[in-house]
Image (cartoon, rainbow over the protein chains, first blue to last red):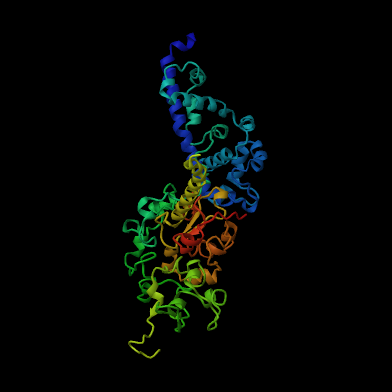
Length: 365
Length: 146
């Protein structure tokens, strides 16, 4: 201990600094690795496209990792088989590509010993550094660092330089990254019922505060996802459109009729015109509800004949049994109405033709 | 024998029945209540995403119908009218099918923007958000497609 005593303060500070650097740099590198992976590699490596070994598939990755992480770096940078160099994204820097490889290796969870054996010598001090970081980060452990410090304090100041950049040796990542990055929530997401919702008068009516929320607040998009922040908030698009009382609270048919929106009829040709058929079908309904007038016009503005005929509706008078029960279950009109076209709460939009009554004695039209 | 004693064992099953009934009512209520504030018609597609470690896809109908009529996707591109019924995967998309008909870097942005589509909360089930079917008849079910 004598040679160390003189510089113990120095050593301790250096070790602390080193520990801090390691503590901050390593998760940062892992996050970067994941980001690069998601952007460039995941397209194939998530699903195993074109023979790509899947992320986290230890069996597939073990033989590859055994060849050494530098070999993996070389493959990632230069390409191999069906895999393009840098995952096809030539804008990525070497460091970024390597961080993605480190992330993949960390997810493979192949025993770190195999990686250590073939990893560059610079990898050796890293585990010790991380240990020091773990110890030093708890305040109680800072005062008696004697057992943890000598290893890292004995390293020349070159050590932090080797570990600090966003390019940590793969072995340390493989060994110490259980991965807070894994998306592993297998529990179905169904938000708990708040008291207000459970007793809402009409569950199809949403309270004003919950209408047209931006993606990050809508309960389905993941606010932690960077892409979510880039999505257009609905109200930004709905601002100029005629409103309605249900669904998106946009009257889409009116918006189209007034050419407030000009949705394309063809995927590529902006000039293509819709084939519109103007034919109303009146369906007499039981009970006192007004009869249904089905307008082909508004439907053919949006849809092709083949969307409904003959699979959903047999194009023949009297051949289709339609009931509200079936519609609520998603049959017939319910294939769209109640899912994306205006919902069934808007009774009178369909049931629009009052029955002739004895009092008025109006002739049936 | 006290007649009151005789009723005791009979009451227990009733309590259990009441608890069971309450549980059923609570389950139905929770199925009926809107569980999120997303747009009407937003489709969550989670056939393979969770299994592949990706966030589920959220497809915004409203965004697309501002730009395209229904027929472009549902007739020309062949999307079935059923959430999760199209077995879409990235191979098909890159091959130009389904979303890939437009999301090819030519008509709309390309597949490297993973997180714009794969933006749902992990574990969210395949469904048309706020559809009467899922609210009334059959709540979204986990499809174990391979």
